[in-house]
Structure formats: structure tokens, C-alpha cells
Length: 453
Ligand code: GDG
Image 1 (cartoon, rainbow, N blue to C red):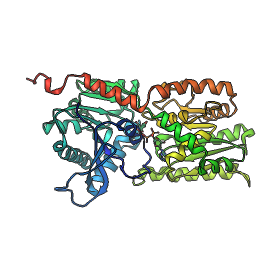
Image 2 (tube, protein in one colour):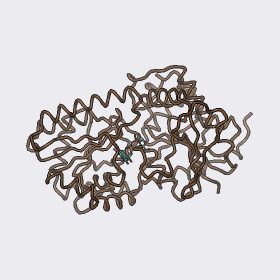
Image 3 (tube, rainbow, N blue to C red):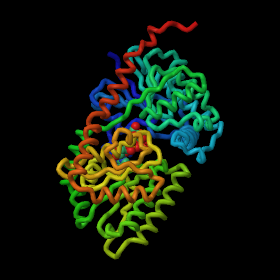
Image 4 (cartoon, rainbow, N blue to C red):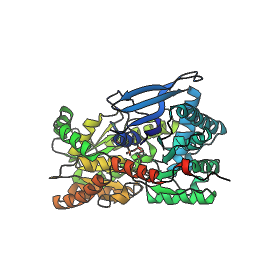
């Protein structure tokens, strides 16, 4: 069997121990472990001249990381403007945030072409290529144009909106047509598959999307959590609580994660259920992400004001209701924090899946598990009906769920957690990758296809 070639915008840095926060890397890293594979993508470096650049290769634990650089202009047009300033809000149903410029579309195509040009010479005929996410929608077509005959699959990590929303993208038709180059198109949920199929149908594209829900490595995360609670950071966090209950939020600082709405929900808890005043601490870890994009800078400012206002209003001289961190925390430490937390609070306004919800479940102590408060709008929600599901736009709903979570008797906590635990252990990063790749292999090879007339 040939190698697995993973292609994503960024590859993880193979030799760095701390990795940037991000679900794609976390999910895929668990999936490629132990497989003969190559991971191709952008190095993270910007250089003024990329003409004639060579692919940089580094092999660690059987995985070859092959990377190329980008110019500052490509970074701005392809990454910041088109991918994160346009496709991201569109796919998260935020039409009011779209700004389309043809120059950015040109940069997006140029970088996809550059990926194809440098990847093609590295390929062997029996390789299987797996392209990831919205940065690389047209890559499959560009590889086909370069004569690549391998099986190519595509997986979208973020939601896909219905045609009534996605048609706001002026080049939607072209983008959807280019996806015919893929042998298999995967999305996170049935809802995304229905939406994408509706878009294909509206544009007369003969492709069908299939749902493959991503998961985590629950055994690995649990092991980290068990170790981390006994570590210096774990013990220090617990001691600092002075017996108070802990609510934990962990998210990249992104407007899709519903952070301001979450703060308002927590403030509503303190207002409507004053018995929790001084008895609970909300720790929100929100590492800065895409800090160069204006909407992210505005969000950061908005959150700083909100946290300051809520703390000012409800704090006492010896208790601060919200602890808010914008620096990343090491993954091992995070796992321990999840185990210590009485409540995991995950309230995105839209999310492809949301791995944090699954990590919270995995990290719990079976003898005394915490409760998960989860948004209906996370892709994980249909998989985790035993969570306390909330509408994040309704601060009172979030407050009620938090109150319920903080006061839930142990037998009910255990019952709900067991349901969620079964799901998190059943659908992991490894089963997600296995199911997708098995489906890709089951399709007729492009070599065996009838030539088109
Ligand atoms: C995209 C989709 C989909 C967070 N803060 C820190 C940190 N993290 C880790 C979490 C988790 C990951 O980052 C975030 O994953 P999510 O799935 O929650 O969200 P996105 O980054 O938006 O991921 C998402 C995912 O892709 C996979 O398909 O589920 O819907 O948007 O693992 O723990 N990690 C560390 N420090 C932090 O401060 N080390």
C-alpha cells in the first residue's frame, strides 16, 4: 500500500514540544501517528522571493514533514484575507462580516497552484492524498491539472452553510465545480453534508459529501490528565481555588466560539443565582489566534472590556469571578485543568465539531465526573445528547444550565458522563481517519476509471 500524503495549510513543527492551539493539528496528529506518511504544507515562514524555492523536508517518527514558504503578499491575500477574512466567516454563517476582493481570490488560487506545483514531484503513483480544510478547496483540481492520478480525498473541518448563505460568495460556483476533482469529500456532520450537497445540486456539480465526525485520542488525553492533576500546575490551580467550584472554558480567541455571549451567560448566573457568589471561579483560557486580522483584534478588545466590567461588578476584595488568560497553556497542563474543573463550558455560535468538548469528557475522573455545558451549534452536540445543551444566544439559558451543572447530584453526573464517555471512546481521531481512508480506498481508483468522452 502507498503512503498517506496529508496536505493542510500549516504542518505542525515536528521538533517543537509546544504546538499552537488548533483542532486540525490535534486531530490529524493523532491520526497519522505510526502510518507511513508525508505531511505537506506551509512552513509558517514568509520570505520575499519564493521563485525557485526548494521543499524543506524533515522526518520525525516515520512522518516526513515537507514545507514551503510564502511571500508576505501571499500571506495577506491567501491566508488573512481570503481564507480567514472571507471563507471562515462565510462557513460560520456570518454574512455581515464578508469582504470579497478579486485580488485576494487571485492570491488564493496562486498559493493553491504553488502547493500543487511543489507537491506533484514528491508523489508516487500509489500514494493516497488527503487534503484538509477551506484554505485548499481548489488544490485537488490543480493536482489533476498537473497530471496527478492518485486517489485524492478532501475533508472540511469547519461547517458548510446552505446555498442561501454560501451563494453570497461571488466565486461559489467555481469553487464548488473544482471540487469534482476529489474522489471523496468529507464533512463533520450530517447537517453539513446536506448543506454542501444542496450547494452542489444548485450548481449542477456531480459530487456527494459524506459525514465523518472527528474525535480525539481519549486514552492519551486521559493519561495526560491523570498525570497533570498531580503536577505543580495542577496542584497550584486546585489550591488557588480554596474549595470553590471551577468552570473551565478553553478556546482559540475566535468570534465563532461565542466568548462574549459566554461571559454574559456567566454574569447572568451570578445575578440570578447569587448563592454562587464567592463560591465559583470561571477560568477562561483563550489563546490569541489570527491576531493580524482586524475582526479578531476587535473581539479581543470587546472581551477585555466585558471581563473587566463583570469582574468589577461582582468581585469582592478576596474573590475574582473570572480569570481570563490570552496566552496558550501547555497541552499536558490543560488536560489536568479539565480534570479539576467541575464544569466544562463550551458555547460556540457555530463550530465544525469542537474537540474541547470531547477533551473535557475524556479527562474526567469516573468516580466524580464534572458536567459539560455545550452549545447546540457545535458539531459535537448531536453526538453528545447527555451534555447540558444550550442556546448560546440566550444568556438565561446558559445561566440555568450552569446552575444545574454546579448543583447536579453525583448519580446524574455519572449517568450523563457515561453516555458521553462511550461516544468519545467510540469515535476517536483514529477511527475518523480509518473510516475516511477506508471509504476513499473503496472507491474505484482513478487509474481504472473510464476515460471521459
Ligand atoms: C477546527 C474547527 C474542529 C485550545 N487552547 C489551547 C489549546 N487548545 C486546543 C484544544 C483543542 C484545539 O486546540 C481546538 O480544537 P477545536 O476543535 O475546539 O477548535 P478549532 O481550533 O476551531 O478547530 C473545529 C477542529 O478543527 C477539528 O476538525 O473540531 O470545529 O473549527 O484540542 O485543546 N492547546 C494548547 N494550549 C491552549 O491554550 N496546547
